[in-house]
Length: 130
Image (cartoon, rainbow, N blue to C red; front, side, top):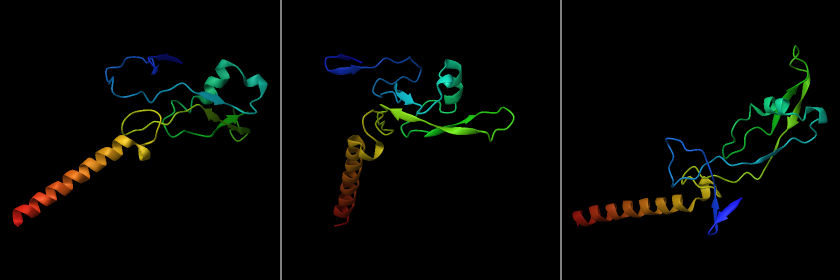
């Protein structure tokens, strides 16, 4: 990781929908495959094994994946456990890493402002009627 003036520098590929105020939900992370047989540790096998997972959103996907041992009988095989390490929380409301939607301070602030405006509007209506 690289920091500039105390801020974490993140590099990402530019896209037409790039918005500098939003952090990317894509982060590097480690995946551990406990008890994976040693002969399975090659790029082709692991790529094929983990392809159903894809990119991980904030809630982590599958905790395991099926490893078939027989090309003709798909019932022969075992479930391979998947452990995710270093996966930060990502808020879908403010688009920042480090916390989840339900504890987002920006969301809570916006909800408070909305309630305050609603109360003010109700008070104006009441005052006009008086």
